[in-house]
Image: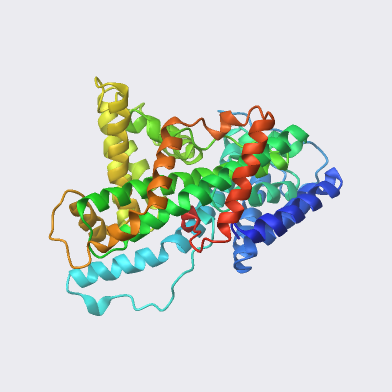
Length: 485
């Protein structure tokens, strides 16, 4: 089930909110958990079993670290002392949690990739007779990359003494399964929401701001991301394209992935507010960044900070010399690329960003375009990000190579290369791309724009929301890019 659908807007959301507010406060988390499992299992009920398994494992590991596993709950659970030595049992508990979550993620997300890579390697070595002839193809459960990271943060935060273990299983199940950010983020760390799980306020102001967030996010997704995605798909899926068309397709994809994901994040934040939760900002106008380092402080903030705090810093961060810092940056970005997708083009995409981050680190975190006027620094950074998006969007590495070659005019255009231009250079797509560019580089952020909601802003949000719903009735193209991650 997707947010930008009539099923969600007209049926699921009203029912979920009605049940939530009709229940007494002590039962709301149970009602919300049931709603979230229904939301998640709508496509495939078996996915619910997988999420429940991860939830039970991490809940028990949290109790084990707090010394409450197998004991009566007669005393409050205290937070572990940060920096104090941990017992063997506590170390074992956090290890079980991390291994179990990474094991689930690794099997369901990377089994097919590993099998195909193994067979390709054997074929290249002339050992095709040893290939793995497996009929097993593993389906990727929606959102597994998000909720495993989220659930794992609970165990790690409890182990580090940043949060108390939860005694109430329903509260923890609610945290893991919250439908607003379940299948595409943002990744909500337990330490960010622990107090809200125990107690939070519900107010008309929160609901109003949440509705505004949801309306703006819906408009980003339906009115901007979908048309830009149609342009990108037309160009990237064409057998051969001319250089101007290739650049237009790359720009359209850059806008599509931004508005698709930031629009989803806005809707998730808005839904959270309707339920009394305050989620952190996940995007901070990333295409206005003046360096790749700044870009990653602004893009998918919940993932980049997760990788920083749970991977980069434990590896040593920048505390073990310049050489180790560059290795850590490269390793984190390679793994970040692999997190996004089980294919070599994602690995290369992550490696490219790792190289760029290391290059800026060598310059004292200064932009590669330092010394140029700000518009050129922003433009240069966007150019690097734009080129890297080709690796992200292409079907595989050879396809990415052909597309990059087309962008610089290499390779003779094949028959039909002119057809893409006739499709994408229509007034509707050109106007949508222009509006997308205006929003990217000139419009205020949803986070700031919704802080105060005078009547004219309320009217604008309602108009955009209803215009989005009207557009949904005519659009057949309505994917969410990050659902596949």
